[in-house]
Amino acid sequence: MRILMDERGKKYMVKDQEFHTDFGYITEEDIVSSKSGDTLKTHLGREFKVIKPNINDYIELMERKCSIILPKDVGIITAITGLGSGYRVLDAGSGSGATAMHFGNIVGDKGEVFSYEIREDFAEIAERNVKGFGLDNVEVKCKDVTEGIEEKDLDLIFLDLPKPWDAADEAMAALKHGGYIATYTPFIEQIQVLQRILKKVGFKEVESFECIFRGIEVTNKGTRPKTRMAGHTGYLSFGRKI
Image (cartoon, rainbow, N blue to C red):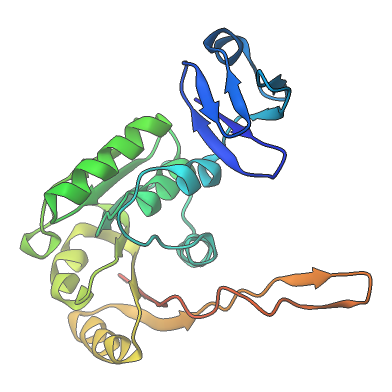
């Protein structure tokens, strides 16, 4: 798997076959023999840079039919829960598989990620995306997490669901001691209900956050925050089994 970037900065995920764009075509032979850092030319003389994709490149270009959780929120989840190599994770609400893939990339070959998705069409997309990036430690299941969690002794359970509190009891039972539940919800009314139920179930250190991410624009006239930004995406809530 490789990515080509044209002179405009636009990226393309390419297979080992002839590649066509509005800048012309690149032969299959040139694609197959290329490596990261090479510059390929189309039959019109336009240049494309060959890039070995990291997970963010892949997720940006992969198939998806729903919104994904942005890296800014994945970073907060990772930092607060201490997610690392060898961890066992359950992700519910797979969508296109982006969050499960981030987790799989972090826990590495010694870890495991199980991703539950109630919609069969989304589960199929998520599975294709996971396999496309070559992650062998992520398993996608077409399953409703509120009906039970098969895996036990999990380090992290992440829920991207409209009513994550419906799985609070199941999460408490499936987590190992010291493990975390983390949720993503777009509305503040949801975290009001969620915090109350998490505490009732027995979770400790229950808290919620919002991550605002604003870039900085550097121009000849001066430096200032960008007028466009990734503002509110969702609220992140956490609880720990202690």
